Amino acid sequence: MKAAEKKAIQNYKRVAVIHDWLTGMRGGEVVLEAILELFPGAELFTLLHMPGSCSDFIENRPIHTSFIQRFPWKGKLYRHYLPLFPTAIEEFDFHGFDLVISSSHCVAKSVIVPPDVPHVSFVHSPMRYVWDMYRQYFPGKGVLQKLVIPFFANYLRTWDAASAHRVDDYVSNSAFVGQRIRRFYGRSATVVHPPCLDSAPKPGQIPDPEGNQREDFYLVLSALVPYKRIDLAVRAFNESGRKLVIAGRGPEENRLKSMAASNIQFLGHVDRSGIQELYEKARGLIFPGVEDFGIVPVEAQAAGCPVLALGRGGALETVVDGKTGLFFSQESVESLNDAVNRRETLRFRAADFARNTARFTRDAFQSGMVASIQRAQRTIGRSGSSVKSGRFK
Image (cartoon, rainbow, N blue to C red; front, side):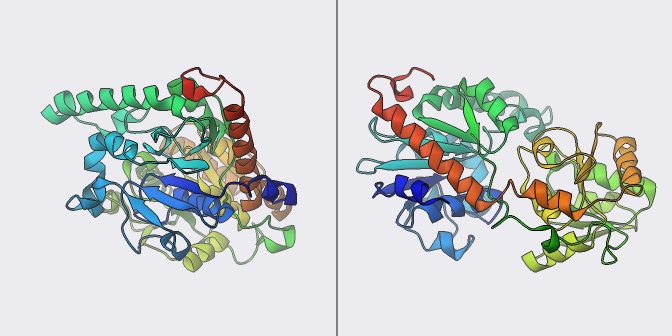
């Protein structure tokens, strides 16, 4: 980050950072770390915190939790308390702070901030479970799905849209998410890609995509949940007979194992060093779902591993078709296997991977966030023009 950018944020002495919940280290928490790095003295607010679940860098901050923290079985059942999240997030008091930054995929963007305090929101996604992925999260035709869940989902959609004006400057992790912010909230957002890499790799640092270290297997690295569509990868490799290695855990694990043929291997949880080794050995990463962004494909490309992705969502912004991977157009076994067959006929170059992944560094992310903070401050400074007054940009 440039000296001028560092100087631009030095005047913020008391900063609040809001993150929906702290229950593990995933892509959202990588973004959170990069935000906290900008403000060493920032205080962290969250609906609930499972101590020890995040990195020391996060855990060592002053962490304020909501009343959800006192609820029973919160570690496993916190998502069941979703109807209470709006009240919980609105109870935080930010008087006395100079700047508020929210890292939001649920309700964090809807905190109530004093009108003279700039609020920047980095949105990983509008609430998937009540907006465009509602049917995927709540399938079925039981009484709960017909009567109870629709009532709460309608309430949450109304509240989520009504609270959209509480943010001075929206930042989205991809243009795909930016489109959803405009559709659901009626607001524009600047795209700042997540900090996938500490620094831009040079061509000589990226393993050869066609080198001898590559083994004859393809890789899936993912939480095993329905919307990730790992079942599609399993069915495709069942048909082709090629070796597929699946790393990750989740509620779909037993079902996927029951579907899988003997050429598909499940590794469960894999640590960071093991993941890097898989990236460097795999013929390609299979990415079969629609994601808002997707840090995993960027990490794979930084290790010279071509990405075979469904040509929708955030993957369109991170993978260069024919240069760092391939897109398949349909959510079908035939389309995915066709992409695998095409990969076997191509030769990829490390230089293309280096050029593409240079866009996704921590420095680039932090520079983008500083620019957003400056825009929010200017919005606050223009008398009568703040979006918090209820008028959209």
